[in-house]
Amino acid sequence: MRTTYHLAISKNLVSDAQWLITCGDPERTDKIAAHLDDSEMIGNNREYRTWIGTLQNTKVAVISHGIGGPGLSIMLDEAFKIMPVLKGVIRVGTSGGINKEASAGKVAISEGAVRLDGASSQIIPDPEYPAVPDIKMTYELIQMAEKLAIPYVSGITVSTATLYTGQGRQDGFRGYQPKEPRYSDAVSYWSRLSAVNMDMECSLLFIMGRLFNIPSACVTGIIDERLNSGDIIVEQRDIAIERAIRLVIEYLRSRIFDNVGE
Image (cartoon, rainbow, N blue to C red; front, side, top):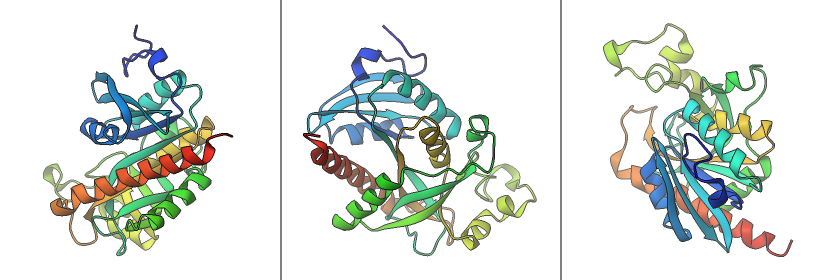
Protein backbone atom coordinates (compact mmCIF):
# COMPACT_ATOMS: atom_id res chain seq x y z
CA MET A 1 0.00 0.00 0.00
CA ARG A 2 1.38 3.42 -0.98
CA THR A 3 1.40 5.95 1.82
CA THR A 4 3.49 8.64 0.10
CA TYR A 5 2.50 10.09 -3.26
CA HIS A 6 5.94 10.86 -4.69
CA LEU A 7 8.19 8.36 -2.91
CA ALA A 8 5.60 5.63 -3.56
CA ILE A 9 6.72 3.48 -0.64
CA SER A 10 4.90 1.89 2.27
CA LYS A 11 5.42 3.36 5.72
CA ASN A 12 5.92 -0.04 7.34
CA LEU A 13 9.09 -0.59 5.27
CA VAL A 14 10.88 2.48 6.63
CA SER A 15 9.12 3.30 9.91
CA ASP A 16 12.08 2.00 11.94
CA ALA A 17 14.78 3.76 9.88
CA GLN A 18 17.04 5.73 12.19
CA TRP A 19 19.20 7.39 9.54
CA LEU A 20 18.54 8.80 6.10
CA ILE A 21 21.19 9.33 3.43
CA THR A 22 20.04 11.39 0.47
CA CYS A 23 21.56 12.36 -2.87
CA GLY A 24 20.45 13.94 -6.13
CA ASP A 25 21.23 11.23 -8.66
CA PRO A 26 19.05 8.09 -8.38
CA GLU A 27 21.94 5.95 -9.63
CA ARG A 28 24.10 7.19 -6.74
CA THR A 29 21.68 5.53 -4.33
CA ASP A 30 22.79 2.19 -5.77
CA LYS A 31 26.42 2.96 -4.90
CA ILE A 32 25.53 4.09 -1.39
CA ALA A 33 23.24 1.12 -0.74
CA ALA A 34 26.03 -1.26 -1.77
CA HIS A 35 27.77 -0.32 1.50
CA LEU A 36 24.75 -1.39 3.58
CA ASP A 37 23.93 -4.87 4.80
CA ASP A 38 20.84 -6.61 3.40
CA SER A 39 20.07 -3.65 1.15
CA GLU A 40 16.88 -3.72 -0.92
CA MET A 41 15.38 -1.25 -3.35
CA ILE A 42 11.81 -0.60 -2.21
CA GLY A 43 10.82 2.36 -4.38
CA ASN A 44 11.69 3.89 -7.74
CA ASN A 45 9.29 6.65 -8.80
CA ARG A 46 10.29 9.71 -10.85
CA GLU A 47 13.54 11.07 -9.36
CA TYR A 48 12.94 9.29 -6.06
CA ARG A 49 14.71 5.95 -5.71
CA THR A 50 14.57 4.38 -2.25
CA TRP A 51 16.73 1.69 -0.67
CA ILE A 52 16.58 0.25 2.83
CA GLY A 53 19.38 -1.64 4.58
CA THR A 54 21.31 -1.83 7.83
CA LEU A 55 24.58 -0.70 9.39
CA GLN A 56 25.55 -2.25 12.72
CA ASN A 57 22.04 -3.79 12.74
CA THR A 58 20.53 -0.31 12.56
CA LYS A 59 18.05 0.50 9.78
CA VAL A 60 19.28 3.08 7.23
CA ALA A 61 17.29 4.49 4.31
CA VAL A 62 18.81 5.90 1.12
CA ILE A 63 16.62 8.14 -1.06
CA SER A 64 17.44 10.29 -4.08
CA HIS A 65 15.87 13.73 -4.44
CA GLY A 66 16.67 14.88 -7.97
CA ILE A 67 18.05 18.33 -8.78
CA GLY A 68 17.38 21.36 -6.63
CA GLY A 69 15.59 22.46 -3.49
CA PRO A 70 11.96 21.86 -4.58
CA GLY A 71 12.51 18.16 -5.25
CA LEU A 72 14.44 17.78 -2.01
CA SER A 73 11.68 19.51 -0.03
CA ILE A 74 9.09 17.05 -1.34
CA MET A 75 11.28 14.08 -0.46
CA LEU A 76 12.02 15.35 3.06
CA ASP A 77 8.37 16.19 3.76
CA GLU A 78 7.26 12.68 2.84
CA ALA A 79 10.24 10.90 4.43
CA PHE A 80 9.91 12.75 7.72
CA LYS A 81 6.24 11.74 7.92
CA ILE A 82 6.95 8.03 7.61
CA MET A 83 10.23 7.86 9.59
CA PRO A 84 9.20 8.76 13.16
CA VAL A 85 12.42 7.57 14.84
CA LEU A 86 14.82 9.34 12.46
CA LYS A 87 18.00 10.51 14.20
CA GLY A 88 19.50 12.43 11.31
CA VAL A 89 19.80 13.00 7.57
CA ILE A 90 22.99 13.50 5.55
CA ARG A 91 23.17 14.62 1.93
CA VAL A 92 25.87 13.06 -0.26
CA GLY A 93 26.04 15.31 -3.29
CA THR A 94 28.36 17.02 -5.75
CA SER A 95 29.45 20.64 -5.89
CA GLY A 96 31.75 23.09 -7.64
CA GLY A 97 34.69 24.57 -5.78
CA ILE A 98 34.97 28.37 -5.68
CA ASN A 99 37.91 28.58 -3.30
CA LYS A 100 41.55 27.92 -4.17
CA GLU A 101 41.62 25.16 -1.57
CA ALA A 102 38.44 23.55 -2.92
CA SER A 103 40.04 21.51 -5.67
CA ALA A 104 38.33 18.74 -7.61
CA GLY A 105 38.54 15.35 -5.96
CA LYS A 106 38.21 16.74 -2.46
CA VAL A 107 35.14 16.56 -0.24
CA ALA A 108 33.34 19.69 0.97
CA ILE A 109 31.71 19.60 4.41
CA SER A 110 29.21 22.45 4.68
CA GLU A 111 29.26 24.60 7.83
CA GLY A 112 26.37 26.73 6.59
CA ALA A 113 24.72 27.76 3.34
CA VAL A 114 23.56 30.85 1.45
CA ARG A 115 19.80 30.61 0.91
CA LEU A 116 19.45 31.09 -2.84
CA ASP A 117 17.83 27.67 -3.30
CA GLY A 118 14.45 29.17 -4.24
CA ALA A 119 12.47 26.79 -2.01
CA SER A 120 13.44 27.44 1.60
CA SER A 121 11.91 30.93 1.40
CA GLN A 122 8.51 29.23 1.11
CA ILE A 123 9.21 27.23 4.27
CA ILE A 124 10.76 29.95 6.46
CA PRO A 125 10.10 33.23 4.61
CA ASP A 126 12.31 35.33 6.89
CA PRO A 127 15.55 35.71 4.86
CA GLU A 128 17.53 36.45 8.01
CA TYR A 129 16.89 32.94 9.35
CA PRO A 130 20.22 31.13 8.79
CA ALA A 131 20.73 27.83 7.00
CA VAL A 132 23.04 25.91 9.31
CA PRO A 133 23.60 22.16 9.75
CA ASP A 134 23.76 20.25 12.99
CA ILE A 135 27.02 21.45 14.55
CA LYS A 136 27.86 18.19 16.32
CA MET A 137 27.35 16.05 13.22
CA THR A 138 29.32 18.45 11.07
CA TYR A 139 32.26 18.57 13.48
CA GLU A 140 32.26 14.77 13.75
CA LEU A 141 32.27 14.45 9.95
CA ILE A 142 35.33 16.73 9.84
CA GLN A 143 37.01 14.56 12.47
CA MET A 144 36.17 11.42 10.48
CA ALA A 145 37.59 12.93 7.26
CA GLU A 146 40.84 13.59 9.11
CA LYS A 147 40.86 10.08 10.58
CA LEU A 148 40.35 8.52 7.14
CA ALA A 149 42.83 10.93 5.51
CA ILE A 150 40.16 12.08 3.07
CA PRO A 151 41.11 15.46 1.56
CA TYR A 152 38.42 17.96 2.48
CA VAL A 153 37.47 21.60 2.84
CA SER A 154 34.82 23.02 5.11
CA GLY A 155 33.00 26.33 5.08
CA ILE A 156 30.08 28.17 3.53
CA THR A 157 28.19 26.61 0.63
CA VAL A 158 26.22 28.75 -1.84
CA SER A 159 22.99 26.89 -2.67
CA THR A 160 21.35 28.21 -5.83
CA ALA A 161 17.97 27.60 -7.45
CA THR A 162 19.44 27.54 -10.97
CA LEU A 163 22.63 26.08 -12.37
CA TYR A 164 23.41 28.49 -15.19
CA THR A 165 22.25 31.95 -14.12
CA GLY A 166 22.43 31.27 -10.39
CA GLN A 167 26.01 30.06 -10.52
CA GLY A 168 27.30 32.60 -13.02
CA ARG A 169 27.83 30.15 -15.87
CA GLN A 170 28.30 31.73 -19.27
CA ASP A 171 27.34 28.66 -21.33
CA GLY A 172 23.58 28.81 -20.82
CA PHE A 173 21.17 29.63 -23.63
CA ARG A 174 22.32 32.83 -25.35
CA GLY A 175 24.76 33.35 -22.48
CA TYR A 176 22.04 35.13 -20.55
CA GLN A 177 22.90 36.47 -17.10
CA PRO A 178 21.07 38.93 -14.81
CA LYS A 179 23.00 42.14 -14.15
CA GLU A 180 23.35 41.65 -10.39
CA PRO A 181 27.02 40.80 -9.54
CA ARG A 182 26.03 37.87 -7.32
CA TYR A 183 24.72 36.22 -10.49
CA SER A 184 26.68 37.66 -13.42
CA ASP A 185 29.97 37.38 -11.52
CA ALA A 186 28.87 34.72 -9.05
CA VAL A 187 32.13 32.85 -8.63
CA SER A 188 34.23 35.92 -7.91
CA TYR A 189 31.46 37.50 -5.84
CA TRP A 190 31.01 34.59 -3.44
CA SER A 191 34.68 33.65 -3.44
CA ARG A 192 35.51 37.15 -2.19
CA LEU A 193 33.07 36.49 0.65
CA SER A 194 35.04 33.32 1.54
CA ALA A 195 32.44 30.76 0.42
CA VAL A 196 34.05 27.47 -0.59
CA ASN A 197 31.62 25.75 -2.96
CA MET A 198 28.32 25.88 -4.84
CA ASP A 199 25.50 23.37 -4.89
CA MET A 200 21.70 23.54 -5.23
CA GLU A 201 20.32 21.84 -2.11
CA CYS A 202 22.26 22.24 1.15
CA SER A 203 20.46 25.35 2.39
CA LEU A 204 17.03 23.75 1.93
CA LEU A 205 18.18 20.66 3.84
CA PHE A 206 19.47 22.76 6.73
CA ILE A 207 16.31 24.87 6.92
CA MET A 208 14.01 21.84 7.08
CA GLY A 209 16.31 20.03 9.48
CA ARG A 210 16.30 22.97 11.90
CA LEU A 211 12.59 23.62 11.54
CA PHE A 212 11.61 20.03 12.31
CA ASN A 213 14.43 19.37 14.79
CA ILE A 214 16.02 16.60 12.74
CA PRO A 215 19.84 16.86 12.69
CA SER A 216 21.22 17.38 9.19
CA ALA A 217 24.59 17.61 7.47
CA CYS A 218 25.85 17.98 3.93
CA VAL A 219 28.89 16.32 2.34
CA THR A 220 29.62 16.91 -1.34
CA GLY A 221 32.29 15.69 -3.69
CA ILE A 222 33.93 18.60 -5.51
CA ILE A 223 33.82 17.81 -9.22
CA ASP A 224 34.88 21.10 -10.81
CA GLU A 225 37.03 24.12 -10.02
CA ARG A 226 34.99 27.19 -10.89
CA LEU A 227 37.87 29.59 -10.29
CA ASN A 228 39.70 27.97 -13.21
CA SER A 229 36.89 26.77 -15.49
CA GLY A 230 33.27 25.71 -15.43
CA ASP A 231 33.89 22.21 -16.74
CA ILE A 232 33.64 19.03 -14.71
CA ILE A 233 37.06 17.49 -14.16
CA VAL A 234 36.06 14.02 -15.29
CA GLU A 235 39.03 12.14 -13.86
CA GLN A 236 38.25 13.52 -10.39
CA ARG A 237 34.47 13.14 -10.45
CA ASP A 238 34.20 9.50 -9.39
CA ILE A 239 37.02 9.92 -6.88
CA ALA A 240 35.23 12.82 -5.20
CA ILE A 241 31.89 10.99 -5.07
CA GLU A 242 33.41 7.79 -3.68
CA ARG A 243 35.24 9.78 -1.02
CA ALA A 244 32.00 11.50 0.00
CA ILE A 245 30.17 8.17 0.21
CA ARG A 246 32.96 6.53 2.20
CA LEU A 247 33.10 9.42 4.63
CA VAL A 248 29.37 9.31 5.36
CA ILE A 249 29.19 5.52 5.65
CA GLU A 250 32.16 5.34 8.01
CA TYR A 251 30.80 8.23 10.05
CA LEU A 252 27.45 6.49 10.47
CA ARG A 253 29.11 3.19 11.25
CA SER A 254 31.11 4.87 14.00
CA ARG A 255 28.15 6.88 15.29
CA ILE A 256 25.90 3.82 15.50
CA PHE A 257 28.63 1.77 17.21
CA ASP A 258 29.17 4.51 19.82
CA ASN A 259 25.44 4.60 20.54
CA VAL A 260 25.03 0.85 21.06
CA GLY A 261 23.80 0.22 24.55
CA GLU A 262 22.63 3.79 25.22
